[in-house]
Amino acid sequence: MHALIPNLWNFPDLGLGLGLRPVHFNYILENWPAVDWFEILSENYMDTEGRPLYVLDQVAERYPIVMHGVSMSIGSTDPIDFDYLRKLKDLAERVGAVWLGDHVCWTGVAGRNGHDLYPIPHNEKTLAFLIERIRIVQDFLERPLILENASTYLTFANSTMPEEEFLRRMAEEADCGLLLDVNNVYVTCRNHDLDPWSYLEGIPYDRVVQIHLAGHTDKGTHCIDTHDRRVIDPVWELYADVERRTGGRATLLEWDANIPPFTEAHAELLKAQQFRHTAEVAHAS
Amino acid sequence: MPRDMPELDQIERWMQTLFMDADGVRSGLRSEAAGNILPCTEESLEGLVLPSKQLDSVERLSIYGNMYFSRLIEVVAEEFPTVQHLLGKEVFGKVVRDFVTRHPSTHYSLTRLGSKFPAYLGDEADDIPDREFVADVATVERAMEDVFDARRVEPIQFEDLTAIPIERWGDVRLQTIPALRLLQLDYPVNTFITAVREDRHMDIPAAAPAFVAVYRHNYRVWRIDLDVRRFTLLAALHQGGSLGSALDLCASLPEADPAGLMDAVSGWFREWTSEGLFYGAHLDA
Image (cartoon, rainbow over all chains, first blue to last red; front, side, top):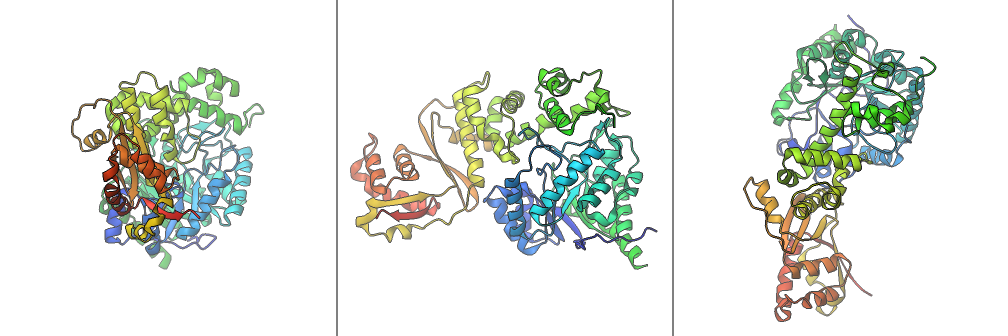
């Protein structure tokens, strides 16, 4: 049995959470469902004073909120966008975010934005570059960044280390946290002909603060991280392994396309309980 | 890492050029723009991007290129459903592809993407059928997006207006809420938009001056047609004119009935304040 590893910052295990999505706003406001916590896509609330923020304020009064962004572009060679970071910081203060994060990726360069999570080569040079950027951002935000492994679809010829080693060194040397998306581990490993179990061996679990679960689309030749369906069994198996290793981490189900009614998404999330129970038993023994 | 490997900045700008090529990654690879950043042909591509067991290097890059356009088309379609209905899905997709190629996103928020779309349809896009009508529809749909996110303020009530001494009414300047757009159009598009959103057939109406107010009230977005008198009065106030000067402007219209105007105006303000269109009333010193 693996040793149980707490995260370095003692961030709480918030339990099982869902992404806060507009299609579920009315249900949530009318029912205040028994969800442990909500994660928001930061950018959906940073430039609005309309209904999304109105709803978020009410949700934040009742549930822990975690902020997860898609536009920090920490791996971009463009200058850091401090206007963006200021808005991010203000929103985090407004909703009392338990932690906030983004992805290990870049989203645009030369002033343009592709609105996607683009990969970076895993080598010493990009590692050093990324570490410096993370430190600057953390200093500005005055909190650790919790960065997620994105799904990737290509391999750079100038990568010199496996992704999990890159993530470990990035997290340790920049002193940041990790959001381990086990669906992304599965998708990335499928796309790169790698073994996801070996990937999980290399993760520094004392840096893992949160876990993501999601469904993906299997195209046969490759997988796309679509967040549009249920979690497949092999991903649940990876999740169970991570839960056994850590003794339990805040876990979130992402569902961003073909979003079902709230109760259906919640039921899918609650499947995680069986694996968390295993971890709790392991923790107690 | 081999010594002749490109810098991260080069890789990112090169990849972005490929992903944003309207004719696909293969076309991007042959483009002068990409070649100026990194001299790489399809034959030498494996020196930068490795194939997987299932996909060659171009196919792997194309996953990102295809997702770039499909995502942005989806976002613009969500914001401009009536425009998509008018053009048909295929033409709409091509128009958006051209639009984002000529006007790529430069902001982290996807809600900014459509801000130039109405003007693009009206002035720049190739082969748009019923161009003026389509552009007017887009103007209203974009206004709906703008007011959805606009700054929130506390509106004043009708009683706040009646509290102003009647002899000072001419000097009052009313502040319209940020979530209000007043649109002067060449086509009566409002009922057409409603018909499409309710899935009812309606022929494209003949050109005729039309005036529309788009606003947010209680976190819902509304569209209402205005007659020329109401529009003139509201627009004059919106631009900062005093109530007296706005009424003079309104009374000077050929359509105005000066004798009945003052009776009508009271009802208009009762209606507008109940819809929360004003948030301040100031008297000139």
